Image (cartoon, rainbow, N blue to C red):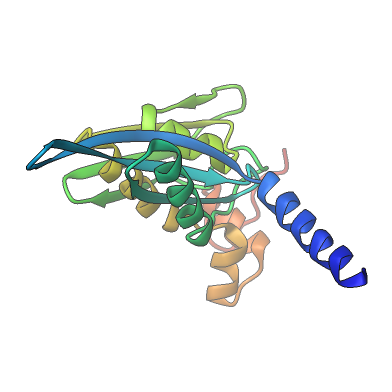
Length: 191
């Protein structure tokens, strides 16, 4: 009896953990294999998963049926989550560039109220990540797989002032003063 309750509790916890993630289907590709009796169709799915609080991942799954391909892609996406530091929980800290193959992307922070200005696959990544204000541009390919991988490349380059300060052995306030453009040794004007 107690063992059954434990199993139920574990299952419930797993369902709660799964519910914290938002998944977006980015792309479905139908492929055909020609065999003796005709064509056999298969499906490939690209899914982006995130908790809308700074964690995001993507996965690719292939199967004979669409729901199974989506499930495989979602499971792979949950295994490949990365953490991205967000400024005020709504935008990025600085501009960064990413590329994968022929896909190149530029992502920039934006002031409050701007919204997500990005193309289809990139928009899905930012919505799952929880970014509210960002300007992004995709250059080169329009292939959804390469655009998502290039976006993740740009997001991996994001660093918060805390990360930079820790790496340099300085305080966060010193890093922020330098970022605002105050000359070395002078204090930034209080606003």
